[in-house]
Amino acid sequence: MKIYTCTAFILWFNVVFAQKQSVNYYSIDWDVVNIDAPSPAELAQKLATKYKTDLERTRAIFSWIAQHISYNNKFNRPGRKNKTSLVDADHTTDTSTSLTPLNQLVAEDVMKKRTAFCYGYARLFKFLCDHAGIRCELVTGYARGDLNGIGNSFRTNHTWNAVQIDSNWYLLDVTWASGYFTYGTSEYVKRFDDKYFLTPPEQFAQDHFPDDLEWSLLQQPPAIREFQHSPYKGRCFAKYNVISFFPSTGIIKAAIDDTINLQVSTDLVADRRIGGGSLEDSSILGRLPEAVFCKPVANKDNVINYKYIVRSSDAQWLQLVYNDDMILRYKLDITDSRGGK
Image (cartoon, rainbow, N blue to C red; front, side, top):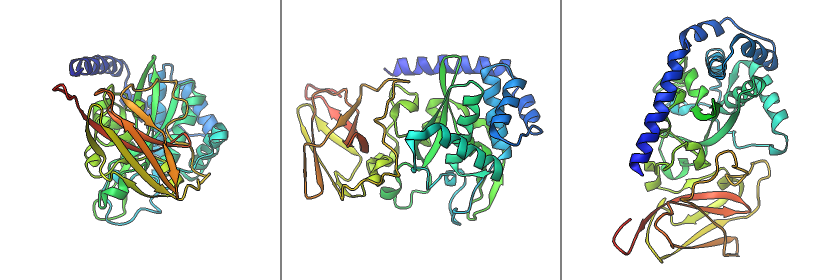
């Protein structure tokens, strides 16, 4: 499996390297500084007309946003570290029944104000890509930041994008490419950083962890260090006002045929302003066979009980579901009683 992953990464790197060699990114970055438009639709038209390939258009859109939009640090508190502060505390609010109007609404607002949270950056990028004929997706998840109080912090807090170029999916984060916060202050420094453009999945995974594991673009997504302290809290952890959960640590060690009992305490009253979890249609990529979705076996006195019987050492992720929303994700460490992992 490791050989396969390594080979896939080498192939991915060669493809991207060859593409980058054929495109003058510096020229595009320089050109888009002087391009502007009164609306996102007109901007998309200008960029799509000026550049011919999907890679060139993607770079132009990415570079334009990173160089023209500043992070809204209205709610940034002093003392937070640099790029890891670029998260949107209000990004969980969603109106999934009207995604296209929402993209347009957010894009127009960002263009008007020239500031945004990560949610605004990502939606503007998607809007421009959609209008330029480039397939693009919003990705929500966890971006590694201040870990003071890890148990409360390891949850959805950021939004970025995945984009399809020449039938291949790539990851990028235009928010983090736009600038950073200085250490010890709330000062935002505008600085274009293209290392978050088509970043190799292994590198991207060092500080980005998606709600939907498929969007890691890795065959075996890593269990980042925060799992040692707490399970991963999806968007819907807040939706159901979870009070407590068991186990409290994020990595569960078990053997074949073991029964794992889990418990979530909540008031069960859903906040309808918060969109669904990671169980919405993911037919774009398919699903990881190593991810197991576990549904409740019983509810009593606002306590949701789960039971998972380990049948195979292939299972790597245990995701607790309520009302088709993913609430918590645990990492499984399964030992095969026959003498293996």
